[in-house]
Amino acid sequence: MEFHEDRYRQAQRPKYDCLLFDLDDTLYPLSTGVATACRNNIEDYMVEKLGIERSIIPELGNLLYKNYGTTMAGLRAIGYDFDYDEYHSFVHGRLPYENIKPDPVLRSLLLNLPYRKIIFTNADKVHAAKALSRLGLEDCFEGIICFETLNPIHKSTVSDDEDDIEFVGLSTAQIPATTTTSSSEIFDIIAHFAQANPSSKLPKTPIVCKPSEAAIEKALEIAHINPQRTLFFEDSVRNIQAGKRVGLHTVLVGTSQRVKGADFALESIHNLREALPELWEADRKSEVGYPGKVAVETSVTA
Image (cartoon, rainbow, N blue to C red):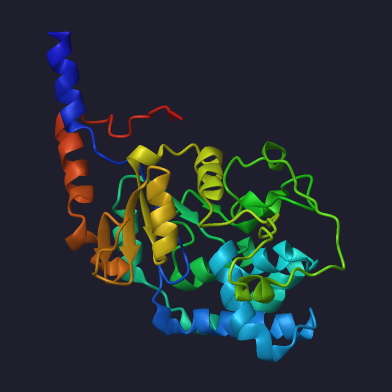
């Protein structure tokens, strides 16, 4: 009799217990112009603060972004040394946040979903908090996995006033801080790719960020997320594909064209209900199955 009871519970249990969301160009549309402004600010930083020749920036920026996930990670890899907080305040400080409007429709959708909801962004915590506040979604998520979560350098403790922004329960002691010796030698990545058969290997970056599988796995570990029971929402195809490789269920946001690695594709995050009705149906089923025990904790199997 116990066996049947167990199978019945299994059938009633929702497929997911966590929704993991990218932030920029996922929870608000690309049309806000924030991404374009951010790219322009990065280029200005490279010229004004790092003394890079403006004429090579389009090619250099493209190679860094393609090979390292973010321009910032690439700049550190090839030998530029700079303060991370200064970089973020320069790049994000002048963004047109006023273009991000409150989104009561998305707020209602999120609040009605009975799952853990977590933000996972490569951006810094100040930017993440500002963008969520503009959207009116700051209280819709359990926590934020951001740049500082995965790169907890220059910090020995998480101060009280950051508790609402840093991931809940995060201890910087969990992750070894990476320090690199500053070198005046800059690796010429443009010349490297200009060779028919590049002889040297690309230098590694000390920065942990998407789409690195190690970064995604670290984020899942910090937040105690089981990838097999998690839906990952992203506007970046390569981040989606990396997420798929570590076992996440994936939703590409910003197009209805599904690509390799995406389980679902949404034109806009507002299409959530039409594209994934099972998220709401699971809630109803679980209430019928065993009221009062909707959230079943599962252990993460590595």
